[in-house]
Image (cartoon, rainbow, N blue to C red; front, side, top):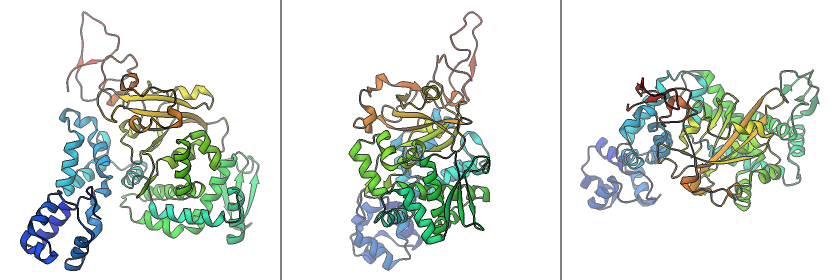
Length: 460
């Protein structure tokens, strides 16, 4: 527990005030000096394991309260929320938010609760999809218990079998007396899979590729064998709408399935050995690009962390149907729409080719120089040719220099393509691609001159 990053001061100060003790009195009960306790409360000293044990023994103290900032996504979660355009004129920097979280975590949590209930842009926050996404972000899309359980099961199945599809099929047959059957599209016209308990079959659409078939089988294993563990996490979330809980539960099932196909330790070792080479990882684990992108956002195991990727899925209109930021601070990935200057839009025309682009948000220094982004178009699962999306993954440029896809790409800040968080939230001036005026800015009109953009604006 002796970690300089552990924010124990506010939690211990609140405990002392609750017990109505002076620093000297509390220090005496903990067998430490008052000056040391004073430094702990001011976050100038880490808390040793011995002091933690003394707190547990002497007081009704929950050690989890030391890391209460994790419930709001930590400092990164706070930064993302304060990046809202409504606070742009306040110029609140990361250092100031770090101080707020260190000295007044309950005040920070109160702000987060109000912000999340209102939603970005002043929405009502009643949308079940938005509520589910907020809960995923609160966890930073890392569910340690599910990851460990999936890793143990994957290791067990690989003791005698090398092919994951065969191993999953045999697992379902031996453990659950379920056979796998591939059915024609006309039999399952609107379904990817179906569990037929009467026939003891898992029926899969013939339109699914090998990677999607494996995922559907892993999903069935999650639903049959890890239902209680998944439900425990889902029930712990505070939702006003049960539809949001159902969406969150569905995400957890998919999370376990992906963790089964790409077990944490083996997957992270492969990432590091290949320089996170996306095509190589796809083939090595027999997964789709979308499945791989999801998994890259989850690598946050304590003591075994991977790089902090974000992932989005967008359609031709630039709408995000999926957005997982994990531990990333990529603000533009958390918006509802994307910037047309981002090459994710061009990936639709590149026929599944991997498109790489270095981008930055011009109006801020956020991201320490921008992000390396990698995009590829994909077809909707089980509906060949009828739906097409682009999957994009990205990482801060300062962490990207050793990545396989960064070879030959200049990561100098001056070479980044400036983009914005969608026209309505972007305050970049003189953008010829602008289609909407930015919110919160007054439009300017000049009768004697016509600019290159239809909307010119002034200060907030």
